[in-house]
Length: 147
Image 1 (cartoon, rainbow, N blue to C red):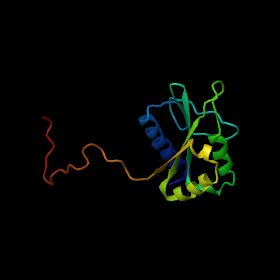
Image 2 (cartoon, rainbow, N blue to C red):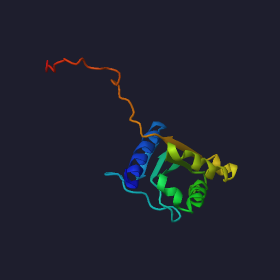
Image 3 (tube, helix red, strand yellow):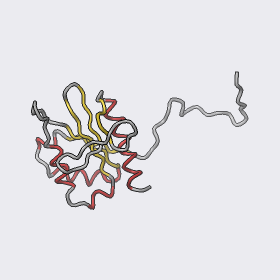
Image 4 (cartoon, one colour):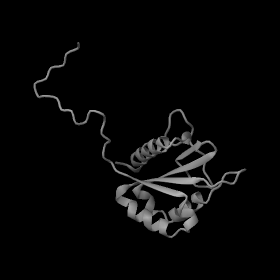
């Protein structure tokens, strides 16, 4: 899987998590109908969402992003953001592959407590989510009838 495909899957998974918490997606990367978000302080973000005046910045970190030396500074900068007029803190949601979650945890330990409090990290697996009928198995000789 290429890094772009991995990032697209992380963006889709993070959008599902954000929507479950009741946020509306304002901007998102790799979307068809919603525009891509503008860079924040020179750093690219993947998702911008809001719910009744509170905002979320969504960041997806692929396994190849750890080679970048500025990752800790990027996380620190995005976690310290506040809204323009009301000066309320903006939360940072990070989607990351479960295999490199420990490396992200080491980066987050270096941050001050007030910034770590604003960050939520979601370790995501590549396992498919089961659907409603995942336990139902068809008999080997079943026929498909239309009525």
